[in-house]
Length: 62
Image 1 (tube, rainbow, N blue to C red):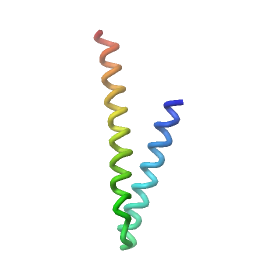
Image 2: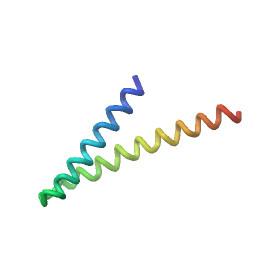
Image 3: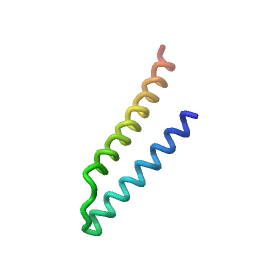
């Protein structure tokens, strides 16, 4: 269940980032909320990646 949440977060973040850069490319004014959403989802994914690395290291050495 949690792995699917991570997949949906990744897909949502990618779609939002693509939408942001498409708006910049088309010279449209992107919403101020869009980069904040991309950053928040990216931070969520980065935290989970770091947690996975930490748990794997803890399991191997402890």
